[in-house]
Amino acid sequence: MRSSPLTATAEGVVVTVRVTPRARREGVDGAAEIVGPHGPEGALAVRVAAPPADGAANAAVLRLLSRARDVPPSTLTLLSGASGRLKRVLVRGNATALLPHLAGRIAA
Image 1 (cartoon, rainbow, N blue to C red):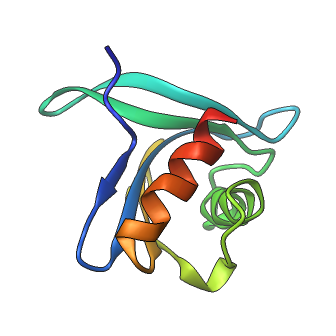
Image 2: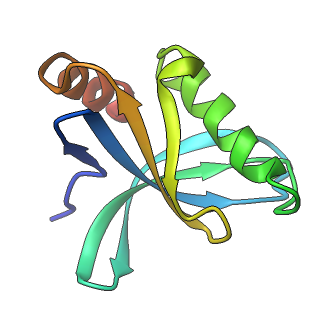
């Protein structure tokens, strides 16, 4: 059973993202299971066309999540993973309202 890539916090919802840079097409592939430092965990698999240089892939991930998950770009902040494929992105807002919205968008 996959765990969710979403975690509620006091500031909003943290989304764990597994990024594939330099993809032919950008898109969200949905939930996937990865092996993290604390064992298996859920992640949202995404593909971006940007290369992993000078923050281009990070900016592309935030733009893609904003569009795909129907949240304003100003609510997204990269918390960790700036130089790796595994990233944690904070979606600021009311976690009680955001969780069902984002969970529904992941399943879509």
